[in-house]
Length: 197
Image 1: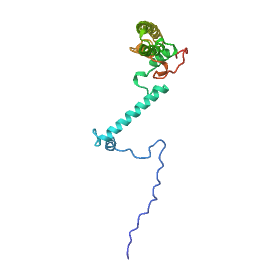
Image 2 (image 1 turned 90 degrees about the vertical axis):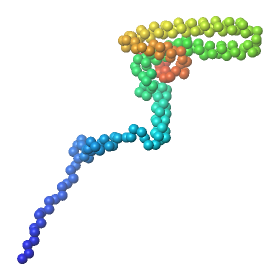
Image 3 (image 1 turned 45 degrees about the horizontal axis):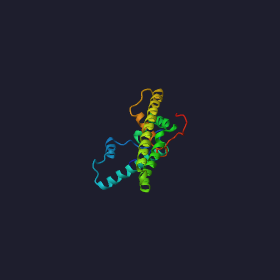
Image 4 (image 1 turned 60 degrees about the vertical axis):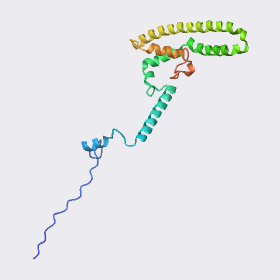
């Protein structure tokens, strides 16, 4: 009589558990695996490739900041143009008509005339040079007076809106006022005569 071992009854295969809500659906990796994935060499093997990547990244950042200066997107602007105070200063300057922005193109035209006219009419050289000096120094004096009025106005408006006036903000506004409106960066976001926000 041969006795056979009775095989234990086979249990049904466990059903795959459905992932519970909010879970990752995979096991958490060990600390050793996470550190190995994060580890990068301090000095890369291919230096040319690293330089090329750095150059591309710098070019991309420069293009983004240039685009931001055109569109007024403050998140990507260079640091010297960011912040509500600087935006307010830009708006105050762009809302008024500044004498310097008109004077400098006119002064440039006068200088070109002063260079060319003596070649055509040499007898007018003395008269022309005297007139040019008077016009240029007079224009510069008017621009300085206008800048003093702008300085006083910026200080008053900034202290009303933000309290203490941050160092450099007034100078930032005066430098912007000297530039021709069309060539200002960041581009003006406000029209002449419009009240700054």
